[in-house]
Image 1 (cartoon, rainbow, N blue to C red):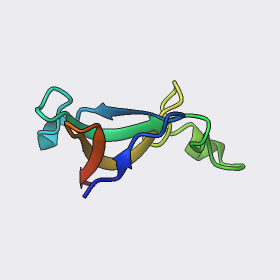
Image 2: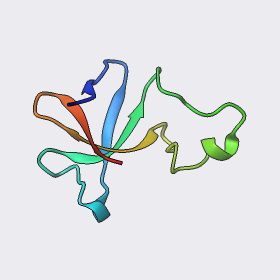
Image 3: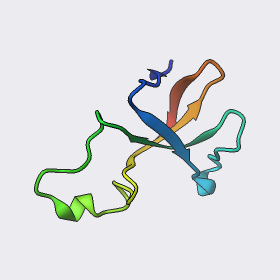
Length: 82
């Protein structure tokens, strides 16, 4: 199945994982799922070491999930790898 439709208050983008062949230019687009929005965690409580780790949070506020997803033609998102 899918994880469903993207909620209106959440932004999702796919980051290329070229070593695994997951590219946003694939058909369908694929890549690591990054999310941000008011309902997405912005950091860990009293853990500046984790909050400054770009493997978890990007400088521009995206949470890197570590999941690989693909956008489907019907507007849903499927997770295809980890």
